[in-house]
Length: 432
Image (cartoon, rainbow, N blue to C red):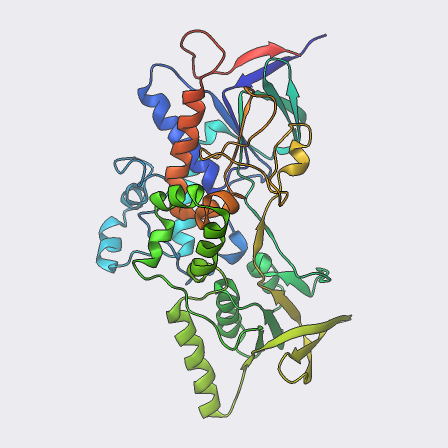
């Protein structure tokens, strides 16, 4: 017997901030357009969550609240951060705070608030396990959920599967060795810890060092990084233009050598850099402990972790100076790698979709974030993230989220849908 398969104009894979912004743009368009665009978003988490393991209570955002999910696209949107503050009764308090950068826990609450307003478009607890082209230029998206396997037929597919924690080659995660993504969950079980080793030189590494130094006043915190010292992030006004929407056009149209130069020149706006206030605070702590003669915060600069070995109660870590070769053995309760993230690779799911790749093996992406595929025309496949090689540093950042969502939705609408007449907000159905 044939089974009804819902057909959507847009199926989103993942529901972090990027596809949340797209869902909001879709909702706002459908509210004013006589022709509705149908959509559904599939998220493997049981509920909305964004880097929950790093929601340190005093950590702030590194991006202005004005670069929220909607404001750069629609400053009057009811989904803005300012609207969120008003509904929470904190708008005046926030204004009096005179700060562009909200607490990270507050911004996460904003994202949850916005996600709840469009939860009719989301299927949580659904992990996409397959994508297959089918007759008519559609894609069948297979998702595994609590109640079994479901199939969603898509005229357009938007991947926003976020970033995956990166560990250096040879590092095997264990109860004593883990990525900073799990900081709050893992640290809560280490009340009696005596020593931590934190590997990394970026913002997350510095935040983890400061957090552990505060939370565990009896423990030693050892920071290990290959640089001479933490490097400050360049958030100056002119450098910040690299995050402007117009910069995406300039980057996309630039020759390959210019693209490489731009990433190299402006990597210090985002990669392996730390807010200057946090750098100053950590330096104050180191200096204060030297004055008091009780050093609990130790910095191993120009160094690397040469070896780790598990013990019954922790991990033995060998730290090697890259300058002198001198080795220091540290018995720690945990080694935390704050070594960044990498974009999730949609390649395995798209193996049957004839996606074009460049000479370096990277996916070819159009200016509208649509993958170049065979056959043409066919279902559109869009990427939110993993496009740094074509669109620049803002590929996976919040800075351009609202504009990127608008451009993808406009591309989907402009390409049209092979169904005559106006469509209702409910999906059509076909048999398969």
